[in-house]
Amino acid sequence: MDEALLDYARKYLKESQDALATCAKDAGFFETLGKISDVLASALSGGRKVLLCGNGGSAADAQHIAAELMGRFEKERAPLAAIALTTDTSALTAIGNDYGFEQVFERQVRGLGVKGDALIVLSTSGKSKNVLRALDAARERGLVRIGFTGAKGGDMQARCDLLLCAPSERTAIIQQIHIVAAHIVCGLVERRLGAGR
Image (tube, rainbow, N blue to C red; front, side, top):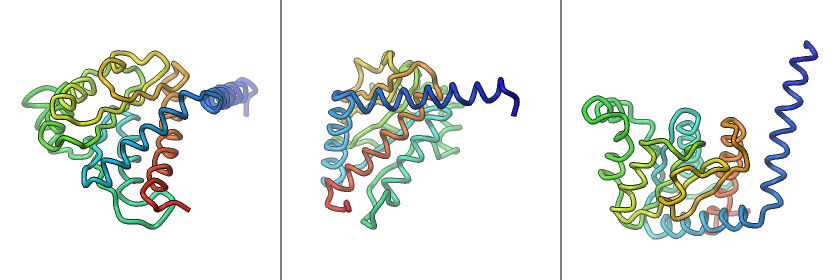
């Protein structure tokens, strides 16, 4: 491999490593992970569900997290109610066509969300309009609002009950931190619900 390409790879891995190391030293990061897992465990054990949404890579992460909860993360257990609002192409295209893309998650939250559910939104910028509208709808319907974003927090800060900020402004690194954090949350939820090992 060309030395310039190797240099890019080394720098990227170093930036990833530094971001994870920053998280590992941040007591507030761990506190937020704990609070998120407490909220999710409480909602799920009370017969409520988790809704998730995001755009692009964050949409894929929403689906990934929903799958870890609905299937399993590390232990055989009962399925946990989780729905990624990014997967129903008929709903997404109908809402996008009839109402506009900014409402694709909001209308699903209004249709599926009930008081006591949790909404997890992922936005690396914290400024995605469709995500912000979903948070506003969740507040009106009594859902607990959980956000995963980047270092700056964007407009999500004022709209979330709990906000996990990845210590980076680079989209790909933020997304890496989000999925690592989500895996930790899934493991903590399993342990809180008595399914840990």
